[in-house]
Length: 188
Image (cartoon, one colour):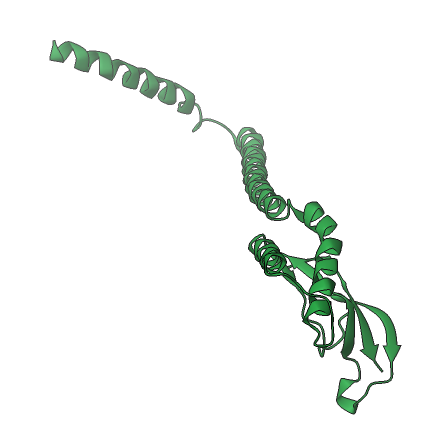
C-alpha cells in the first residue's frame, strides 16, 4: 500500500516535468527575433508586478495610518467629552470663587459657613479630577494663545512690561487644552 501511494505522489511531478520539457524544447531553436518580444513582455510584466506590489504596500501603510488616527481621535474625543458641560459650569465656578474671596476679606461682613466651604472644596476637587485646571496668569509673560488682553496699562515697574498685571476672568484648561482664555490686563 505504501508503494501505491508513492506512485500516486510521483505522478503529478512527472506530469509537471513533461510540461516544462515540452515548453522549453523549442527555445534553443528560436531566433533572436522571436526571443526579443518575449523578453520585452517579461520586462513589462516584471514592471507591472513591482508597481502592484508598491501600490499594495502603500495601501497597507495608509490603512495602518487610518487605524492609528481613528484610535487617537477616539481617545481625544473621550478625554474631552465633558468640555461642553464644564464650559457651561465655568460662570458658576467664577461666581463661587468671587463669593469665597469676598467672605475671606478681613473687613467683610459676609460669612462662608463650613458647609458651603465643604461644597466649594468638593466642587473644585471634582473639577480637578475631571481634568479641569485654572491657568495661573498674574506675573506671567503675555501669550496671545493663552490670554485675551482686555486692556493695557502702564507697567508699575520696568520688569512688568509685556507681562500680565491683573486677571479679569480666569482661563481654564481641560486635559491641557484651552476651553476658556484668560481675560487679562497687560503692562506696557
